[in-house]
Length: 115
Image (cartoon, rainbow, N blue to C red; front, top):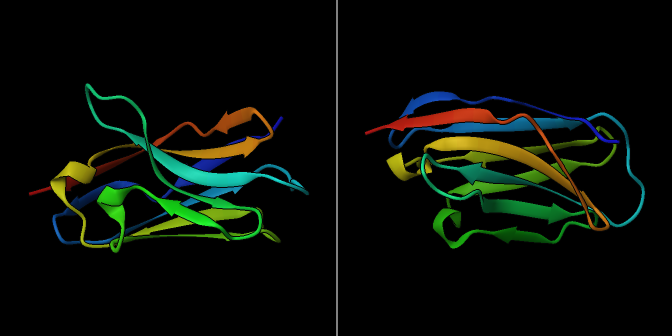
């Protein structure tokens, strides 16, 4: 089992920045990805950004150039720096860790961008 704990959500004005952090309960050695997904009201959960154990990154088109994902394998953390936030970025952000075919999820943190 892997437990994930997110922090850093909140309320921000459009154009502002937030940084989300996620800490995993134990170190995983080997192939795995860590990342962030979000779910807006009335919509399905969608990928925001993921990063593999060896640093390969994938961003949703809607956040490219504005968001930056990073991970620290020694600290077992993954962060999401969000700049130039837009109202459409509002939602609950979930930390994810995928090990093989198993997904682990955090409890979610609310991000609200006011226009």
